[in-house]
Length: 440
Image (cartoon, rainbow, N blue to C red; front, side, top):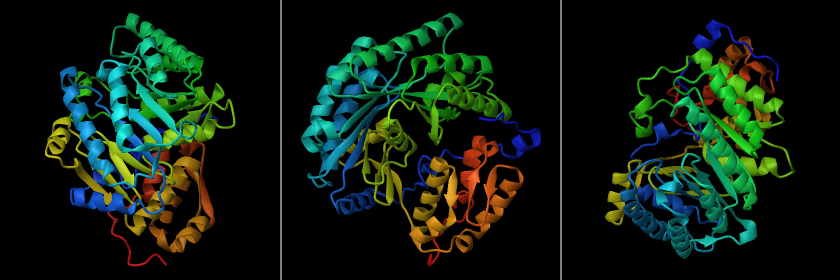
């Protein structure tokens, strides 16, 4: 990748609070008017065609182990209530266990949870399904990883430990432990291993990230996803200990991202879009990584609906998104009343569907073909997106996109500001989310 340089003025002008577009509309635009009845209607309508399902079972990232039995009881109750909405002939093709599985104590508790899930939903045959699990390398052991493999998990997602959470001597031990876990996972049958790497952490330096990238490259995961650190201590209790620590500036964050991109591509990884990098060791690497990426980014397989289970989990049913109560007490309180814990959501308008497609194309392909969108949705792209095309011309003047009458491509310079480019088409961000009377 060419050397990417930003002048100070450009950094200042584009240092905007833009969302990661894990869905469109993004979760802040989910609303409480979308309630349990709205969700039930969307779920029942999704049974048409008997499309396969993907399911996420979300465990808390942090909570008292003493509260986990109650949480698991609520999860089992949600399995029962949710199963009443779906045709039993619809298979579960992908199952994701996210959050901190180590809070379960041992693999036996996870096995019991999966057995209960299997009572209410039909899992696709072993050769046609995938099981993925998040593993926290700070607390996992090789023995636990082997037990997860015995339960049928073939994909593991490792969160990279925060190098600032401990004294410097402990950082090396943490990385060494992570590498041993990777080796153990491969040895016991995991077929696809992924890492999540966060840059822009409080007090993170270029040297810290370079050392971490060196260890990651040495482990050769099948895919690696990079994220900008979201500083939200008021919403995420785990960030309380770094509330007042200095964070890297906008310029430094961009340089850290540049370092990650250059290091990974130089090591042989293929940038497959939306900050996900795949190791091209076989012909299936890209499709596998896209499956994981689409789940984590909220724009999952178009052939499947996504069923989210657990506190804060997001479901996608056709053209509707729904989110469970985010706080564990609220989530459990609903289920103790034998009610689905839907807290908010959104039913997509035609305009939302069009823009979601545009955003996905930019994030994944870094190109956009105006005529292809026009044909698919029976609209004149230049008229429909006249305001957005004006904004794109300003981006082109800054060298972030290469535009033409038929489409545009994100330039190498614009790669680091992909979310800023994508946000041009976010009608909610610009206060233009009311659907037009017609798109023809």
